[in-house]
Image 1: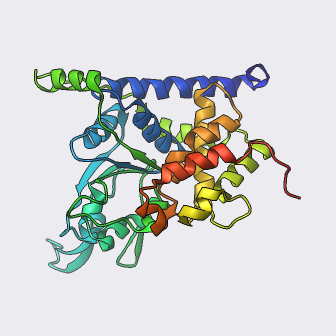
Image 2: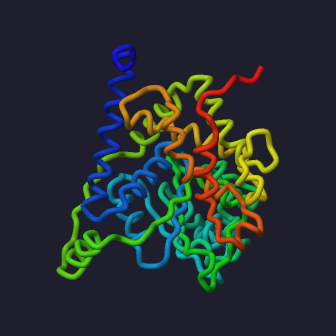
Image 3: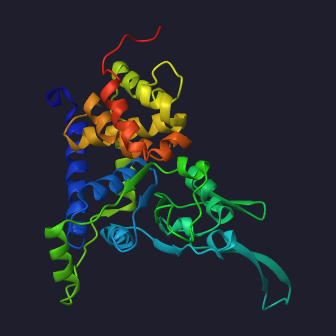
Length: 339
């Protein structure tokens, strides 16, 4: 297939792969393991989406994101979410300023930490739902409205949030509308024996990784445009749609586990996420067209936060990944197209 691609497109594809691997390599100087997490976060970045990282404290989620900001020439800000954090602490607020020449007073909007390009929302589920919802407009529309005035956020704009598992004390579950605006939900697990040994050596001997910037904001925006130009054949797109519809209980494509354990399935935003993420996988594999395998590979991180399980699933200890893996196994890749 690659020999039939326009040389300019092939060159852009090769450059994208090189830049992607370059950012991965810089992050790898500081982060031990978690290769799938790094790949997932970068996939969110190059599709214009946002990433949610979940894991118990101390697994390096915040350090990973801070390291990524050093590998990219982007404006960076961090917001530590706490129960007393208010929306104005994130978005900004109108303050009274006095003109030194005339003595007149006027309201002036003081921009908050959300006015950046790479925003780390640390421990987002420790804030109240009211404060969590302050991010909704920014994440979807890339704008902030305050005092009747609408402000555009600088592109690329990327929110990376971390959260502790819901069963931890002092946390508030994220509203479904908030969860749906995250492109991927990535679960950060414990490091293995070899990785933990390397982590201890690096962090107890004064080791400091020197991270060099690999990409600029303009290059990232260009990469985002390239991703959206990747071709998706009708029968491949139909597979993505059937995968998403299989998360809807009692639907035409629902599996037995979906009907038994799922209360609500994915929104159309889930189908958009699935296709965009698969396009990144295709580019990283040197292809300019999406395959069935690309869709299956990104199905879990794209869907695990968009599927709401019922009480029976919770009582039996069923996780969303269990239902989603069953869907990938049961939904056939090839099927007759709808009329």
